[in-house]
Length: 120
Image (cartoon, rainbow, N blue to C red; front, side):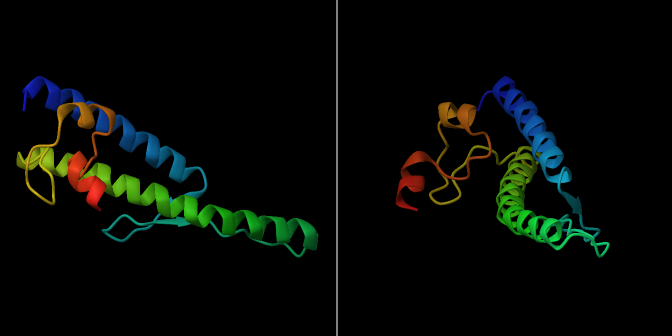
């Protein structure tokens, strides 16, 4: 794969990583574990209005799947960046054939070629 294209995609991945981390930090905090897991902040209650507290718990519950989805996407971005460092970027994890550059332009953290993605 062309080095200029890889550098362009690395920049794109770094921007996406920054965006994902910013979105996650708006409602969660990064865990201190090496895995870098994120935890949605649980609301603190001051013994106030029960209706407001119930709304906060509902919002917390609604944010959990959002956190999970963003974490999964962040993990894919981190894996793609690690593959670039190792010189193994752009290869399908299933069949080990090259992933089409057009696919990587649209979704640089792609793990599979289009054919293997359809089978998955």
